[in-house]
Image (cartoon, rainbow, N blue to C red; front, side, top):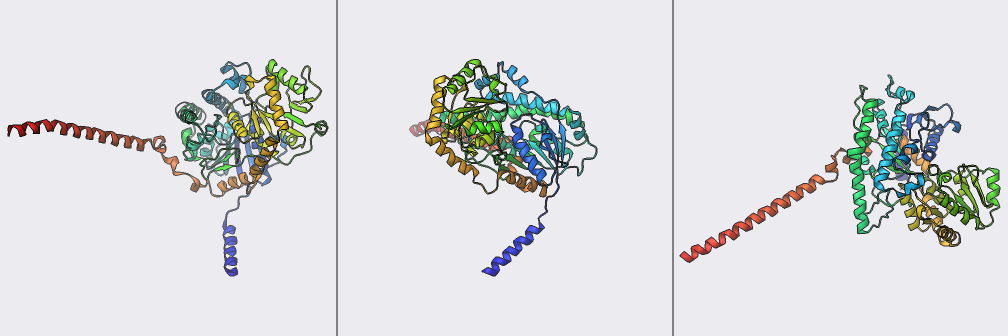
Length: 531
């Protein structure tokens, strides 16, 4: 037995020696959406790739120069930073981002369409980006295209120009349209749409609505969104000798998709080999806090409430009547409040509140005195709250934030509020429930333990799969045959139509046969009487 084991070990070592090692891969990274929170994941990934010795050329909407990434990093900066909210807020006739809580799924899809088209074209117009597109020497220049899976699809054409495989990263985690991209059908019966506040246990009405919205998004992408993106492809890539397919075809050639998701923060669903959950890869061991913040937290003997609405939704834009509610409730509490507030001061600010325009969120949540996290429900912040086991008070504004907080409420570690309906009594009672009911803290400690329990940490998992795709030149063996089907074949609509046609023909034939028999009977009776 021992000799057999030794022989198998020797074979394993021998075969592993034959595997091609990925060293100093040259990677073209394209991250053109200027969402600050998205860069938490991007930066973590780029830093790790450089640490592993890979060469990165990055087309980026936000500079990473302050990261001091060294000689292996080349930056192509998109300037100026595109303020997409100047397009979105006026389009929906809103006074501020807080009014986007009134939007439905149709509005969310329109918002993402506007953001995608405008930020993508802004990047494509850049002179330095044009140099990458029109480069004369492309063969062997790069080994991989690394791109964000966030409404920037025309940049997938770079994989055709340089003849390289693609790995994408999704900061939103799972989205419904990824099923078509990776050759997988998501069952709408128990997989809720990413922008809907449903669970995986839906009522009949919820399943009906979920099916409608999921189908609507599929049709919207196919007939409205993709044609607009195809026009951008033709405008900026159509002059090249290299044939560039339609966007819907290009995105079906993504080798691996790195998803900002991990159990139990997402509902269980069917998946496929190329969809890799790496949720929480932006979370590092806590660093030392600035001295004034550290002192403020250490002296919070009755606990600390941390308040941040992320980088897109800014507290300084909050309507005055809602701002008054927060100040009145906070001022009456014995806990201290650390608030990410983008102005230097707040009129009539109570003494127990500290405000800062920027805060090291994950490092703060790691402090033992932080008892409640008031959040908008963004996925990155929610993951940090879970990782550090801090109960949450959620006020989602748009898109996946509603689903994130719904999941948190059902898991027993959060309370969810509707911002537009917020009152002083609702805010006060919700905070007291989270502060003094130990069930919320106990539940999130258990969820945190599950979230951390994984075979590899998120950054190592992401690097492994990126190198895997380079090593096996796109890893075509991971590709699903479902990607080669027409959309009506993918959903078995042709089979369903055929079955319906057969049933209709059988029904007509049976009806005709019965009618013939009924008409023959009287004739037979007349003949028998005459005889």
